[in-house]
Structures are given as structure tokens and as C-alpha cells.
Image (cartoon, rainbow, N blue to C red; front, side):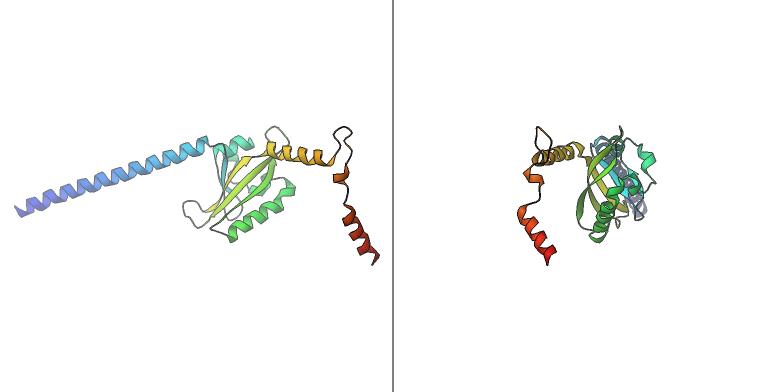
Length: 187
């Protein structure tokens, strides 16, 4: 009799364990599906850069922004896809992220545009090297080319005559700076 009760309790425990495991697996699958759906439809690009500066992941958003298939980005050094003048800024950004594993840092960099020219990206990175599920720097980025071009137009307009295009007073060195500079050279 006692053996029968133990057997029934053991079967119930196994059944409960099996049900708990199935529920946990279902919850994990739902979480993974949610993550995939969010990343798949994000307007932002996401990349993971390993400790050697090589992209180990590129999202569909990264492909949409750059025009380069995500599979072609993976395995490439990230700095190879940057404007040559921005590579030192990229290196400084990565170094800041490596030294601050709890922080996030933002920078602006240029990449080749799908239609030619250069796209400006605003990239925010977070160091998740110590997270075994990630193992790299996660970079979220968006195209800010239109904003940068508008800033450049406004800066040009502030320093040039609208009719002639010639430099205005704002573009000239200030007299105080000129006197300070000439005083320094006459010493």
C-alpha cells in the first residue's frame, strides 16, 4: 500500500516537473520571439562588436540603414565601414566603452550610403563583454544625416551673406583675438 502511494506521488511529481519545464520552455520561446520581432522591425540598426573590433551580429535595421546585407557585415572589422576621418573617433568611443562597462556612450560617425555619399549615424554603445549571452559592445545607431546637413546649412548661413555667398563679419576673426595674437607674436 505504502509503495503504491509513493509510486503515485512520484508520478505526480514527474508530471508536475514536466509541466513546469514545458511552461518555462514556452516562456523562453515567447521571449525570443518578442526579441526577434522587436529587432526585426526596429528602425535603428544594432550591431555587436567583439573584443577585436569585429562585428559578430548585425540586425535587419543595420542592413536597411547601410544597404549592406547583415550577413556581409558579420565578420568584418567595424572600422572598415567608417569614413577614414572618423576612425580615430570610433577608436576613442570603443576605448571609453571598454573603460566604463556600466555606462553608455554616444558618438556620431559616417558610413558609406547605399546611394553614394556618406550617411551620418548617431551611435550609442554599451559594453556587454562580460555578459555571456552577448560578449561584445552593443551599438544602437540611427541615420541622422538630415539633421547634420541642416546644422551645416545653418552654420554656413550664419557666416555668409545670403545674396552673395561671401563671408560676413561672423566669419572673420574677432578683433580681440587678432590683437591677442599679434601681441603674442610681437613678444
